[in-house]
Length: 66
Image (cartoon, rainbow, N blue to C red; front, side):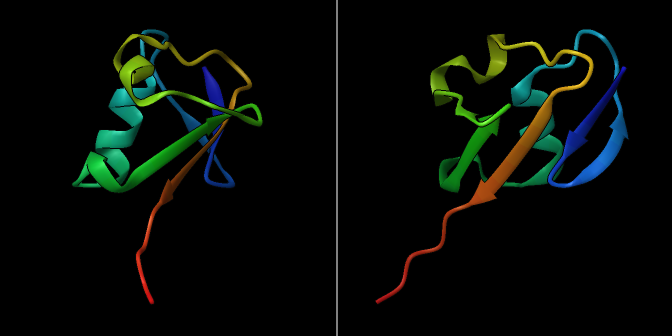
């Protein structure tokens, strides 16, 4: 199955979840937001939300500052 993750084409297994993708991209889940097809995916749903062919996923790291 093919998806677009942070602007790049990517192959992934059918049973891939948002949580698995997040774990591949970042070390710390606590400072990350995820958008799937222009909709925010709630953190508590990441491990249960399977990715579908053609999905566009954006994993964004939150940075504090002042």
